[in-house]
Image (spheres, rainbow, N blue to C red):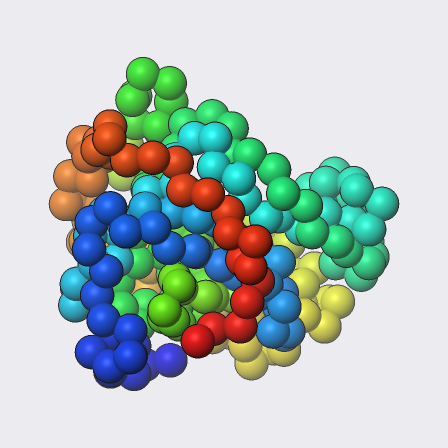
Length: 224
C-alpha cells in the first residue's frame, strides 16, 4: 500500500483516532487472511505523520502456537513454519511496548524498557504497511527485524528465520528482495538518526488513568 492510499483510508471511512482510544494491532498469517496475532492497544497519537500506540503490561493477546500447544520459538527452525498451528490467548508479561508507525512505511518501530523505565532498545519490525479499519490496523510480518541500542549501534535480527521462510515458500524471491530493500531503507534512517529515533519517545510515559484494554470476543472479525 502506498502512503497516499494509507492516507486516503485515514481521511475517508476510518478517520484518526484520539489519544486514549482502544484499538487492535493485528497480523495476518503470511499469505492468508487469517489473523494469528492480535494485541489490544491504547492510542497515544494518530495523525497524518504517525500512529503511536501503547501495549500495556498484562494485556491479553492472541499469539500463534503449534497445534500441540508448543510455543513457536521452541520448535526447531527447520520445521517451525511447516507444522500445523493453533492460536492461544496469553497475557503480555514484563514491561509494556510503545509502537510507532508512519503512514505507508513497511516497518514499525517498537520501544522496550527494563523495569523502572530504564530504556532498553528500539526494535524495527519489517512488515506490510498497515491497513486501517474501524477497529484498528492489520499487517503481515516479514520475519526480518533490526535491533537498535541506546548508543545508536544496530544489528539485523532473525536473518535465519527470514531465510527459512523463503525456503518453506512463505515468501517469493521477489517479495524477499523487496523486504531486504525496505530493511536497508530503515537502516538508512537509523544511520542518519531520523524519526522516530531522534524524537525522544524513550522519555514518553503512559497516562496512569488508562485501563488495560480488553481482548474483544470478535478480535478476529474481518476488517470493516
